[in-house]
Structure formats: structure tokens, C-alpha cells
Length: 111
Image 1 (spheres, rainbow, N blue to C red):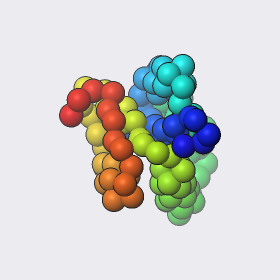
Image 2: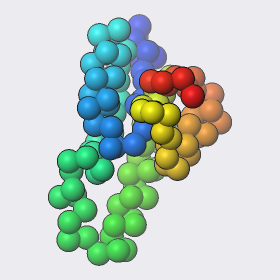
Image 3: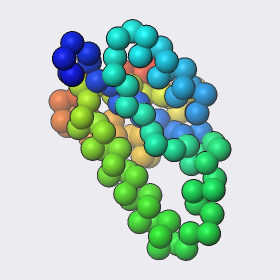
């Protein structure tokens, strides 16, 4: 909580860019501070991965995963963008992390 505003971190596959943007707007208008992903590697930000060797790619993905868990630490809850019920391995890890750290978990679609 920042003042009177709950903080929510969005989690989910970056292939769902449109749903991330919709959730961010909706949750913000409901009076929440929303923390989202920094890039959409699976839907539009392909240039991020271009020209990276395998070692750099692996390190970058590890950094982004760790950074997202730090965003979860900053939040009161997470909101999972699970279009069609899809929850990939990274998102599953984030859900488990959030639960282990006492964060509320909410979903776009009931699991």
C-alpha cells in the first residue's frame, strides 16, 4: 500500500499484450497503483532478443525473471493475466512466489 492506494503487479505471458494494457487501465481507474512488465518479448518487442548470443539471452531472461519477482515484493497483490486459462511456467513460478510471500493472487479468468 502506498498511502491509500493498493499496489498490484501484473503477471502473465507477454503474448497477451492487449489484455495487459486493458487490465492496467481497469485496475488504475479502480484506484490501484499498477506495476507491469517492462517489455512484451512475445508480442511486439522482438528487437530486444535480436543479435543476442545464447549466453546473453539466458542472462537477460534470468534478470527479467528476478526483476519481476522484485516487482511482486513491492506489491500488495498480483493480478494474473491468464487468457483462456493459460499459465506458463514463468507465471506459475511468480504465482508460487507471491503466495509464499503472503501476497493476494487475483486472476483475469477464474482458474
